[in-house]
Length: 285
Ligand code: SF4
Picture 1 (tube, rainbow, N blue to C red):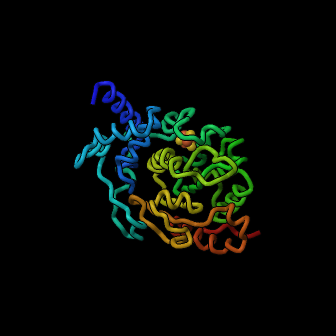
Picture 2: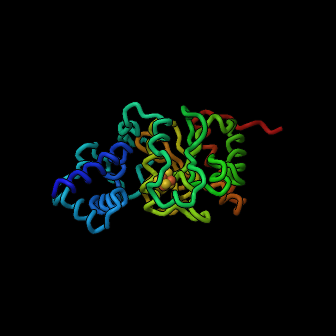
Picture 3: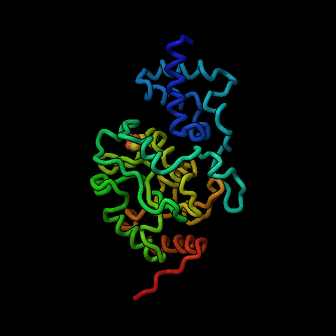
């Protein structure tokens, strides 16, 4: 590898390290060299073939990448994580020292790291209590959220607010955020490369907040955090260990707007969350 290539590669890994991407990328199921190549290409604006060559030169057969060498090894997650009682590595072992929500927001900056930046109006970072015991994670901002720069403020957001209040809380008590911070065009689902690029910021948010419970709203956030391709109906309402914390997935409020009959299932899931957090339902008037 020549000096210029080495320098560009080191810059890329420095950039990834600043973002706290190390633990994220080494834990993916994709071959590390391919993942790195895609991101080298994106970060360095070079053809994928050239980035691939750089990545393989760096790692080489049987060698760990610089990222892997500088970060603790994470468990492979071939399927869904262990349910309840598992003693996996703490979510907070991978914390960036002195990290904070403010620092994460600063690191995002006026982000152009993935193609979602092209059509967004505002980056939708997250709102709520920075020390919340309960964090709701959706998939990505919609139209209203994009305009206002706040998650869950449209029709689905109003329903989420009602759900939170039914649990005896208010929006200010919890933290609400999404897997991707910019609106996917025409409300499509975030694509894999967009999730891979943006979700490290979510991981950092969760590590800073240290909630007792993470409640995933819809398949996208659950599949991202649990690293599974299984449909949400296979594991909705079950408890999972998420790096030492508790995680439960339920249907997205937008799904409930289209399928109000599913509200009862979601309420059962929220009651499980309430039991863990010691919450009492809001009395009916
Ligand atoms: Fe950046 Fe995330 Fe927005 Fe993509 S979705 S441009 S990674 S903030």
